[in-house]
Image (cartoon, rainbow, N blue to C red):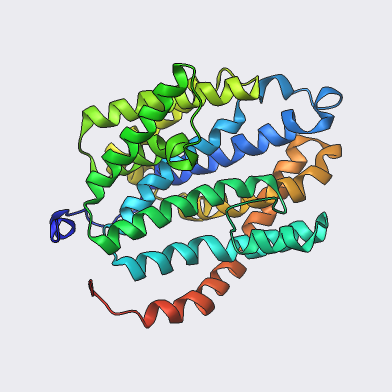
Length: 322
């Protein structure tokens, strides 16, 4: 299997503005869930609360898009380039947003350290950082795959099959301590296969497993039973915009889709800190404030990425040194 990775030719690099827009909507879903349902004010002054209890499934939508992005990135990089590029994507915004959260709502310094290092075990400055621990776990898996020259296609199928099996066992009444690969692997695997545009049967299996996974998440939460339908619709929309990417690119050409996509990550990390204090003025005010702060973070995030990770990336050898 030593040369298998070289034979997996990815499509030419291109923007996917449709995924950027879906990612922004998914972030807003999570924000609405926190603002309009999860927040203690929701029973008193936030009339949208009964329509927002399913917004948490935006996270599972993120995981599908993340699987697509992971496959996109890994198909063009060796292991060192992949690790540096992913670290450059995750850490700068995490540093900035964790610092903002500490300023707005001070927490123990240990929580801050765990947040800025993306330590896999909490508590963190905000609960949303748990998803970054999941992301890092999957990045680590792909880094190992690149190091060992495993076929990324085989990794996606194995990951999704394992996760589907775990969810089947869960449906039979058994709860296994399988960790992120068992609970969320089907979402990442579906996104990876979507990027490759192959293995339709396995993709369909992982899609069904994803619906089951969202359903069981709703059962554990005790609410949000509309979430499986929302996740399924959003994921099918991801498929549509990927396969219709040329048309989407033409329609969205004048739109700042790339900027909106880049705003999604800081918006997700910071909305609870900067938006919650504004909720007394309404959900719209909290949302607009969160979007404004996320937009303002982008230049600083880019500056840190260029200064810290740019020189490191420039020193890496080109090609695949393995």
